[in-house]
Image 1 (cartoon, each protein chain N blue to C red):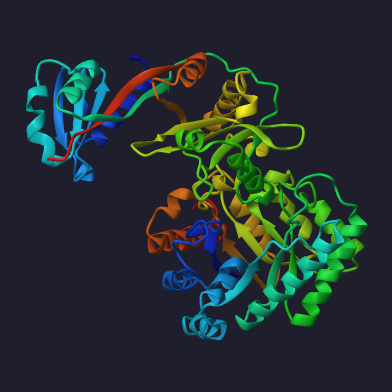
Image 2: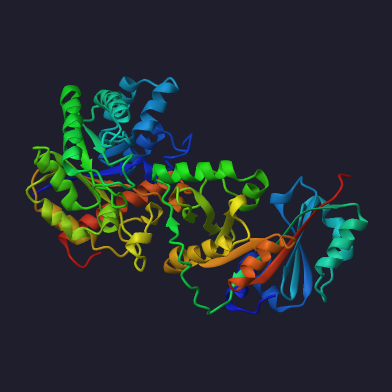
Length: 288
Length: 248
């Protein structure tokens, strides 16, 4: 049976797109640890900002270790997938920098979404596969594994079948995939699609709930809510994942302004309670 | 003022937010509420809440409002303005808040409104370019701030993918079941109905499915905005005039 590691994505605590975040990286780590999370998912822009502000990543790693936490994954938006050669090469250099920082933090994963290609035109799957292969090569050099991420709102890699096609065309069928409940719904694959990953590698699952009654095309990231506050059958998806082996990081990634306006310690507490309740409901169906 | 259900709820929420009882709304009269958040501003806000008027003021100017306090009649906005003028005050703000009291079916505009998601870099880039194309006054009116974008937003895009018209909503501070709507149209694209179209799309696409009650605020002197909202079925629910008194 799989072992779930409960993880908090820092976007749940504050808006990750603000120039200066109200809850900085150090505070987010401390808040997550105090709430009882096993790990944290960091945004690369925060990691680099920490360094630019005079912070030391070795010291941050020690703090993470001392708190018994693990940096599970890095969220970055390097445009490794795009057609433009110059942009793509710059993106791979940016990825190298991201990965080096993550290694210092003891983290071996970096999200690899189709950033830069969310709008048409659709890129040929063989081209995407070659570019993903190049990304993986950088990962092998530095020691971090890219997690090919499906984005439901993207013109490229919006469905589970797209991601599987890229892995196969790249000759990397066991490279890990990052799935996200919101994106599975938004892209039309549905939560049931986690079953199609039975023979694939899945290390990180972004979990969130969504309210009922909204057309999937009209869903936005801000609609994500805590598990149990929406209408998704998350328990079935998690039960499906539970039939696998090894570890899966179950990371709560929300963009909910109501939570951003709340005390981060309260948010972290509610977050881990929601994840634990979700896990409990998979063991005792009907307890949701 | 509207007698609709949404308007009643809005007035009740506003009364409570101002520190008055929502029961007051059933009574003709005027109440004065010293408001600590206005301390040091020398300001008095006059809220017309249907039958009742509430004056929310800097506590230090409360004594000067005694001529306006009347348990048995609701101070009118004109009377408030006259008083403000007489005592040497300046009107520094005014607004009408409109609730959506219609069973009209808003038709699809046919523009194919684009739903923005701020986690997407192309959408953030689009709105940044739009802000550059609009003037500061319009941006202030719409409270469009790149560092604090509203979660629910739609736009009508031109053939190049740039924004012609933008409408957004965020939870109203005094009652989060209402969505406070902002709308802004690129100067070159005004007077062809895009404002009305984009607000219509915001309501039908994003607000109603999320059970968010539309709320439209506008300056009563902005006839374009007033007409736009009236055409969509918004009716005045309450009004506000803000006067700043001279420092003593």
